[in-house]
Image (cartoon, rainbow, N blue to C red; front, side, top):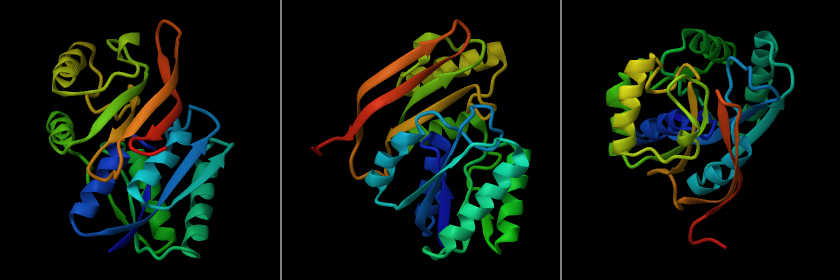
Length: 229
């Protein structure tokens, strides 16, 4: 099946694309939406600009759209306009959604697909958090944490690459502080620097950290594809 995929640059949207491609589907285009506010209920925003280099490494065309009004009905309207616009250029029959447990988000995307006669594919929906996170690492996904906003996650996690040792520590922290290990509740955001979808690994050249004592972000200022000028 020919598909479009919502893509934020994080582990979940990237793994969802990997999963459908592994199943034999063809992802024609990436939809990346930049909400002007970090209070969006549907969309994630850290380091959205850097998704361009991820798109380049995946060799999948990308459409980026900014949404200024974060009211959910306006967001849904803008996403609907984006889908209709994309269908004029790209041929796709369904949309890939990287959600895991947000019923609110899934229903919104189901509604968008229904309006546009498309099928919604949610390959990681309801996956067990522990097995899913291990599956990411086992599949060769390399990703860093780009924001934290939960008890138990301090400044030291910003920009940290997650491997098996870090995952074990996160699992212990998630039990102690009662946050979702897969960060589905917004406890943290991630950015994929390498995975089986990429032709070239992404190298971060410059970055900025912000920390207010409770939450923080890791902003990628400059990145490049390795082995590329």
